[in-house]
Length: 413
Image (cartoon, rainbow, N blue to C red):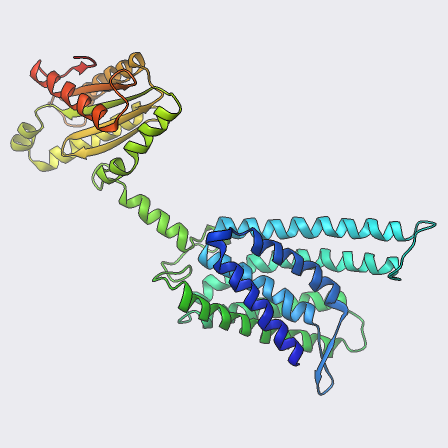
């Protein structure tokens, strides 16, 4: 019993340390250790350790297999669904490859003249490969089930320990039923072995849940975790958003203009300079368009802000549909928009700007109201290579177009 306890403490400690270091070392060390555990738990599956009163506990399944699901759950909660899928598929692929290698070792052990100093029978390799293959299938099923059950329990149970513990206990119990039916079917002590497997895995699941909850509370405490949000569709376990995905979506939403849906000034401030720098470093062409709705103040004063908002939305939609997939547009302020055209030569930029001007003029979103835009164009490297310089030149040409009568594109001067 003492050795099993020390094993559980050691495994939980190593896994949590590697999980904590993922920001510095990446996920590879954690996954390598987890992969090694798959082989160890299979080799140890035939070992039963007495813990008193005639009870025998398999450390391979109780300590190691339970720890594998504990890691899957931790990755799901703190990383994202994509990383969880990657982990599950990687373990399944690795276990499948190891199973095939074990079969080839069994074949080698039967060859004439083969020296087998360990004395391991070929049947041992085959049995280990069979157990590993079955364990891999169950691990994949358990991992997907883990996500579904956790999402269900997290909406109904408070805190972290309760939903995590409940999830691990339920999934490990179902796993014990499935695995024991395969491995011990027909055994004289089937009932005892099944009960022992269920109880030992349940205890291990609660231990790992407690370790997880304490770790998350003290080391990675966040206001929102997967499973504690709005109701979600359970038909696809991995359609659920984890913490990082929700953060990224919230961050992306903060970069969008609330009225028009195009990027906002915050996005421009964050990405305009890096886009220019990347173009300069790659010796690529680039163009910047400064677009302004003509007589917009007069439209607002005479038709009201509701009509003005409708025009801005229509302008943003018209530009977005007319641009290439690599281009991006943002609302710079008021009725002013900036369009960035990566890879666009001066001729291409002029053509796109004229196309935008004509399409805005043809827009019929507000009946009996003629609309037009003035556009100033600056190109890289012809007009400079500094973000501020390009924006200033595009802005200057925009107002040159305004002074020249509006409804025009200015590409030089």
